[in-house]
Length: 184
Image 1: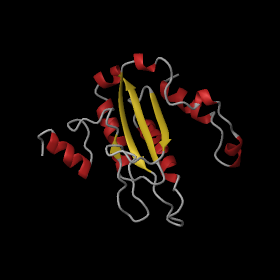
Image 2: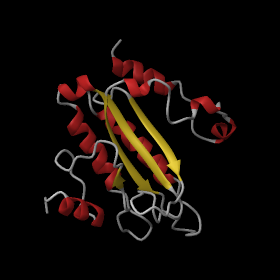
Image 3: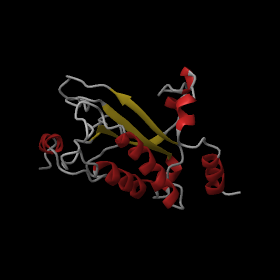
Image 4: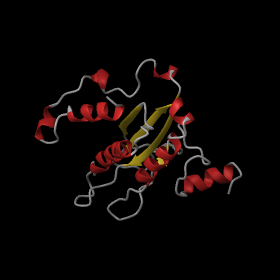
């Protein structure tokens, strides 16, 4: 049985969407972002911070569909690539607004979804990681708010975002970064 078949069987075992999901509870240990020992495993990791926009129908409430869309866009990219470049994990967490100057969460009234794809060093050595990660980044960077403007999606500073590796649209942050490292 191939990895693709195993992954398909795993997806089939998930509960269906709908009212049943509201009854599902998860133990705290299974919801934590950091798992003991993962820091000892060398990986390639691309993570973006996506602002959660307001609902078009009620701008006082968050539009949680952007969170679902980001998750399923990554899964869709995995299934469309027969080389299986994402060999570790897809991780996501939601954070609140921040008033720190360099924080990706700054001015995100409804919070930020932080989402990342990880792979093994072997996948990177095979040359399948970078094209895959770019496809995922392209999808995540293409999201717009109710006004039609692109969301201020940003790479996680401490993860894989190298200006020579991935192409991110120019934003004031990137322009400032490029000027700071002498690559205007």
